[in-house]
Amino acid sequence: MEFVRKLTALFYPERCPYCSALIEATQIACARCYDEIRSKHFPIPAGARGFRCISTFAYDGRVRRMILRLKYHDRTQYIPQIAELLRKDIQSAYSGEEFDFITAVPMYKGDLKKRGYNQSTLLAKELGKRLGLPYFDTIDKIKKTKKQHHLKYQERKTNLNGAFKVIDKDAVKGKRILIIDDIITSGYTLGNCCRVLSRAKPELICCATIASAQNKYPESTVI
Ligand SMILES: [Zn+2]
Image 1 (tube, protein in one colour):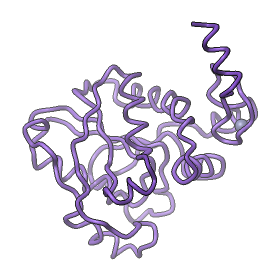
Image 2 (cartoon, rainbow, N blue to C red):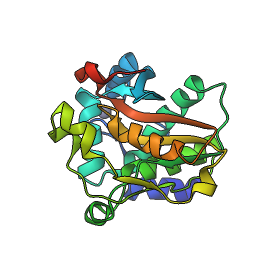
Image 3 (tube, rainbow, N blue to C red):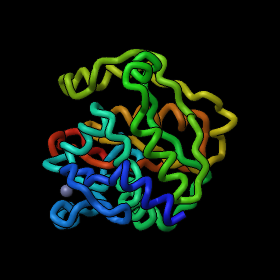
């Protein structure tokens, strides 16, 4: 297996998610980026409209550039390195909780077709492997919405009305759920997903994201 790993690394070398420099397969970032992201790395308590949420990074600098590449430039190869950092934060922030499964904030079908992947789903599946949790799709996005970050604060509230629907209420009832998204900003996207899920009477819903941009939207912090 070691031979196969080395051979694969020769053709598909690992790259630093934050600056694209070549790294060893065992590293989660190059030394320079690692020092910088570690110095700022702490689980940030965020608010998803009253639901518990933690984020690994503030949405800024190298982390912001990494997320943009992950979302819009097909850099899904970063997922294992990012998942490893999130796993540690989830395990420390939610150390008293046990989850039944992990899920992700969905994309509208047309948008998913265009991008070809949902980075939050890929991340949740990778986290599931590392946390020993099965992954299930639990929510459908049934309405095409405008991008939340293009809207004014008041419009953000109504843009997502009726956008999400639970796929199978019986699969959610009484369950302890961990839901993943890439970024939390105003908290309306994750918050709406949590509210829709909560109508199906799960026992617990907790959220985790790679980054939080809530420092830019202090009016929305409603923990
Ligand atoms: Zn780097």
